[in-house]
Image (cartoon, rainbow, N blue to C red; front, top):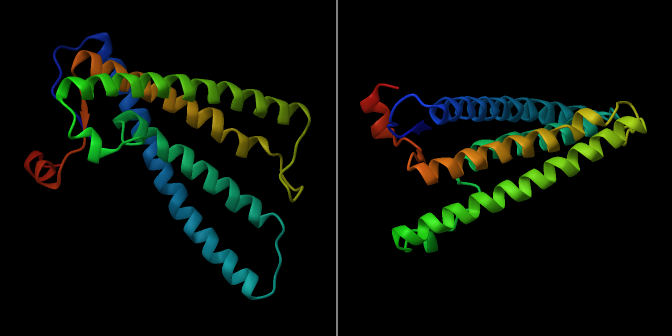
Length: 184
């Protein structure tokens, strides 16, 4: 993913770059978690087929899946790829698409911000009560942290997307031909 050419090195450009790097880091973390999830799932199938029961293994798989989903959504929010109906959207006039982009960004900011707050409160409550995962072997807060962190990052990503729509600096995915042309 890359930014379109921007004018100057203003505060928005610096913030855009920071948010883009955070989204890329979340994307890389998501890819790592996915690879790790595949390995752990394969190992758990082998272990269960051997008749060995490891009670906390399901909790680890569940936590990895939760983290995978929420970290993977951050770059989607940044590019407005998360909520998209191209069959309708691409047939809209350009001005209406911009209005839709603003509405989607505002809804994304509001909903993700609200879920961040509720997720944070829930995580703090689980810490206060010493809540454990279903197997009872581990504290639940590392799993619960995925929600406020993921949605907090999505809130910032939607804010960045809104600013890019309003200022005309849009995010876009590079095609394979563009990557080759740029040498990346």
